[in-house]
Length: 349
Ligand SMILES: C[S@@+](CC[C@H](N)C(=O)[O-])C[C@H]1O[C@@H](n2cnc3c(N)ncnc32)[C@H](O)[C@@H]1O
Image (cartoon, rainbow, N blue to C red; front, side, top):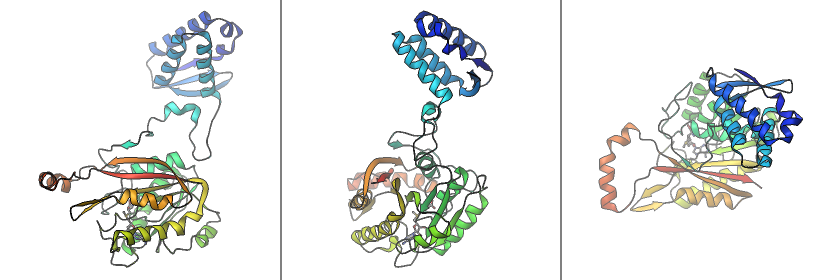
């Protein structure tokens, strides 16, 4: 369906609240009477743009129901901006004048996902991988097409697959040879519609020479870093001493995490974002707040905290089978069962 809004610019509408209301009432009638398609093509001053039907209806109703003429004109100008101007920040490709259309983006700090995205090359075979929705949400908010993303704990390549889909270049690093091989296989399976580079390297993220790699890619620095370290020793990823999952104490774990951070953070562009995805641990009758402890390590550096997101753990079959046992243990032991992990978001100062 196509409608012509060019008349909004007419002097008669600009000077009479009544005429403005009448005009938008007639547009509303047209849009609601014709139910074909969810997208409306709008002609305004010789340019044609598209807008979702429900968003246009909402905008028109706001104009009609405005209490004062001034307010109605304000809403009209906002609609014109939506149709004619692009407002972008330096860190993503979102057009903020069309913010209402991004209903796939979460803006609350509580993330509940009922199931993982298993489409394309994504699969849950690597024990300890995160759900693709995490990098998907973050990449859309904190990167632009063509940006460079670093994942220093790449594992099976969830971030790299998402980068390929969204047109972001990515470097993944993992200490484990098995993980690196699996990551390569997974990432190769994903199509590359934007012809980006996604590379995985088998190395220690506390020591890897990032200047060398950035030079190879002929780029200066990364625009986003996502860290998904082992949650200390909950899952042992390898036998190697420099694997964070082999730290013998929590302090050693934090020191190893900081060594990685110190090695990579100089290569993040100023004002850009760093995400740390991590959960807590329960050991010897005590809750160990790995999340907040690692957060403090990051804050010792040149970063400010932008958000703490709490994300649910989806129920896996294994967990579902043990549910009753854990309920009993929780009641006996006087604690609560983990149902969440954290996504800490920082901005480099
Ligand atoms: C929680 S997993 C990451 C999973 C990943 N996000 C995914 O979706 O597959 C943590 C990863 O860190 C790796 N790792 C541990 N210590 C490391 C280190 N010093 N340098 C690089 N990788 C390391 C482990 O091999 C493991 O694959």
